[in-house]
Amino acid sequence: MTTTSTQVAIIGAGPAGLALASKLDRLGIDNVVIERRSQEYVLARIRAGILEQTTVDFLKDIGAAGRLEQEGIPHHGVRLAYNNRIIPVGLGANTGGKVVTAYGQTEVTKDLCDLRAASPNPTIYEAENVSLHDFDSARPYVLYDEQGVTKRLNCQLIAGCDGYHGVSRVSVPESAITTYEKVYPFGWLGMLADVPPVSPEVLYANARRGFALCSMRSWTRSRYYIQCDPDDKVENWTDDMFWDELKRRLPDEVSDNIQTGPSLEKSIAPLRSFIAEPLRFGRLLLAGDAAHVVPPTGAKGLNLAFSDVHYMSEAIETFTSDGHEDALSRYSERALARVWKTQRFSWYLTNLTHRFSDDPFDQRVKEAELAYVTTSQAGLQMIAENYVGMPL
Ligand code: RFL
Ligand code: PHB
Image (cartoon, rainbow, N blue to C red):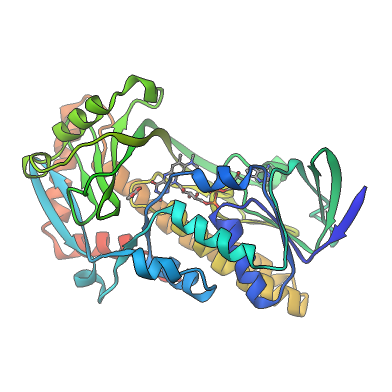
């Protein structure tokens, strides 16, 4: 068997894994990224679209923000809609000038892949049978198959950045991990189309027929979502059916102006809140969706992956320079504090805007809460502060 060594073995080349790899490169810490899929597959995934300022700052810091600075679209507000009304929520106005940026996760991943291509540290794509070993000791290692050959990678630390379905979290003995989970009784049907966005800011609509969301990737490319049955299938939805249902859930002034066109992509995502605690098991650290999943209402999943990586890279820098393990435990505490607050907001916004039951009482209470939060300065500030993201 071929054996190599590095300081940090990073499992997964999603945004969390690639961002961590580039940050460690900048800190002069050796690392290897091991990814199950091909690079083409990783680059084709269409997911989140809104970046918090702390995410933009992180990308600038590692040198991956060139295109983002040119093409990202700053949003100074978001919109909430209900009862045929649209209420603008000022982000800058309620947070001392903070904004979010519309820039797709697909583009972020491409920029991170381009940056990684210039790194002397390797990324192994299409690694099969990845397994994590001895992370409860000072000599952990990872085994994987590359083109049918088993390889061993010795390391000081393993960073589990392999998403919700990855191998890292499930390698931890059940007795050492506590998980919290809420599965929502609906999913999101998303559609991407080359039509100008109907709303210049992200619009979250509570409607009696169910939730709808208007977002964008550029001034010529729109991303729309509608709440759907979690077991529904994309094949059940023609483009015309999607546009018709979307329009029925939006206020008239939006649906009257929406431009429709053929879909470039349609997909259904389930909605779930999930947290695993702690984030550190000996020499294994978890980040991003490997450790927690938020429902996409609020656009926090991708941003949380970046805040984990921020805290994790600080912990790894301290650990690799002084050898003290305390830094690794502090990682878990610091990251989880932000994860729980963000989980709370995503859960709150999901409850406020989605249809959970046929009971008209539930809907009227949601409408009353929307009326309250959008007319109270404290309510508007709470939404804006959370939407732009908690400070690190
Ligand atoms: P990722 O992006 O899932 O990347 C994990 C990487 O690990 C690889 N992997 C493995 N590699 C090696 N060995 C194994 N055994 C492995 N198992 C898996 C995977 O192939 C992948 O490349 O996690 P990361 O980096 O933590 O990033 C998190 C974000 O991707 C995620 O939070 C968001 O995309 C969540 N999310 C959304 N967030 C939003 O804010 N807005 C959205 O609209 C939105 N839409 C979505 C989403 C997540 C989805 N998933 C996970 C199914 C839509 C979908 C469909
Ligand atoms: C998106 O643009 O894909 C998007 C925007 C806001 C969300 C979720 C997804 O809350």
